[in-house]
Amino acid sequence: MQVLEPKFEYDLEQPKAARRLNFIHDDFLLLSESARRLFHEYAAREPILDFHSHLPAAEIAENRRFRDLTEIWLEGDHYKWRAMRANGVAEQYASGDASGYEKFLAWAKTVPFTLRNPLYQWTHLELKRYFGIEALLNQASAKSIWEQANSLLATPEFRARGILKKFGVQVVCTTDDPTSDLAAHACLNANDPDLRMYPTFRPDKALAIDHPEAFNAWVERLEAASNTHIHNLNAFLDALTQRHQVFHQHGGRLSDHGLARCYGQPASPTEAAKIFERVRGGQIPSGEEHERFASFLMLFFGRLDAEKSWTKQLHLGACRSVNSRQQRTLGPDTGFDSIGDLPQAHALCAYLDLLEQESALPKMILYNVNPADNYVFATAAGSFQGDSLKAKIQFGSAWWFLDQKQGIEAQLNALSNTGLLSRFVGMVTDSRSFMSFPRHEYFRRILANLCGRDIDGGELPPDLELVGTMIRNISFNNAREYLALEMPRK
Image (cartoon, rainbow, N blue to C red; front, side, top):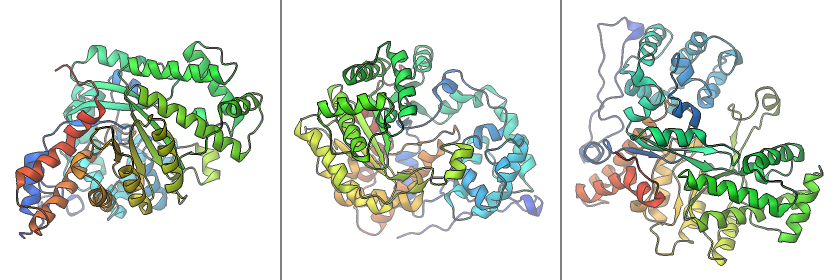
């Protein structure tokens, strides 16, 4: 096995505090000749199909221009906010009302303390890929990096769609509530031949009957979006079906749920109708009623997806907004979430089996956030293959807290050991940031290094075309075939 020496380039012409240590070089994370060839020859130039993101559709359609590096890089990035809080940074410099440069400087001061956190590698990978900046970010280099990046952000190439095209993104799928009007998707797809943007149907608010006031307010929005009077459960289901069809007409072929765990104990239609009526009247359901109603709806959503040959995504296991004081102050999705430790296997398999019994099991991608569930999810997926589809049920890419080198390798190993890595649909950004597209490169480098290590260790044949074709397919082709999304006209 030929192990490569790390390539460190130290620029002695710069002041000591601003010297660059170019660890983000061409062979970053690639520790053997086999790994280098697998990445550079088979993965690096593949386009991106980002089938799960949280990018705002309107900002893509409007081709947003970002005023400065804070606006594009730190706005809404709870990964960075968590690190800043851990470094003793006051909240006003994370999610608060400090100026853009003050927030950026607070992040620059934090970065040297993120060593061995993936944020350190991501930060410098993003600076280099977006702006060609190779200096290490710290307090001393902050001002020059701020000025260099901001000057590029003022150019047309660094508006929202220019960034997507810069990274070879052919398709991006946003995550959308059923009440969304989807005008942004229609506008972009009608006017940009180089890029497709499709909505993903995420109806989790339909399950949230445990908070009747918020649920009923959402039902009113659903009434308006569907132009339907929702007077009973059947009307509710009709409205959801109509919105599902509208998403389909806009090119959507995916749904998504973000749940603590799956629901697999459905109420009968009669029982579900009674629960719905009581909640519409403002009554708080019991825990069992919530479970049974949510299970009833999850089966309903599964059938809708199967009827239209959609792919359902299940993101399971997060324990969200665990800091109640900060939840009240800052709201959700601000970086106060944890890995959950709920049992997953029984409920997940029960849900899959209920749909399978009806021959209504759609294509599905399963994502776990607890590393203890890797083999649970991988083997659950393997138990529900069939219908002459290639890897119909997928064990999805490492998600959230697991989206880092060890987590990615662990997911790839669990999938390899229990299923077909060759049929894997690969990486997604799962991000709200336009600065996250190098995550695909990061993943591909880790995949190439893992397979290169197996070749050099004699665990895979030294057939680069055989292994490289698998890597190329995981990078792009498998997702394109599996999801059956319409690609750009050009």
